[in-house]
Image 1 (cartoon, rainbow, N blue to C red):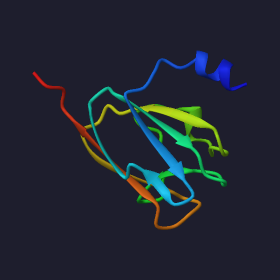
Image 2 (image 1 turned 135 degrees about the vertical axis):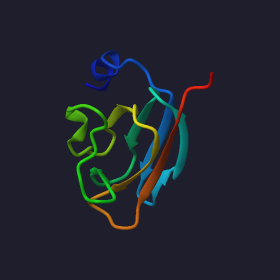
Image 3 (image 1 turned 60 degrees about the vertical axis):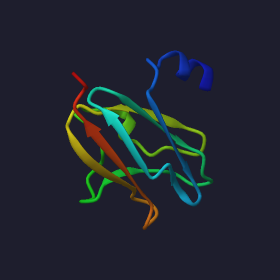
Amino acid sequence: STIRELAKTRGFDVLVSYTDTGFEPSDVAITRGQVVRFTNNATHNLRLETQRGEKFCPDRPSPSCDDLAPQEFCELMFESFGTQCLKNALRSGQSVNVNVKPQPE
């Protein structure tokens, strides 16, 4: 159930919602080590991939790489600096940019 799954999460810093029209917001800025929750609010599945067509699992193997059915979510921690452009491999033209910056001193 969703309640049990939510109990397993550590929390997230930024929420990105996926809808039938794409990612909202389509650009996010975070600092290294922050977690982004991707929630599928569309009527079809979501498969996060890089622009090169690789399954997206930042910095570690994760079951989060599986397709997300409607109303499912995954939480991904970003450790590498730079901009990751992610897309839904199942729908063309829908992408989100995650800009990972160093932590402020």
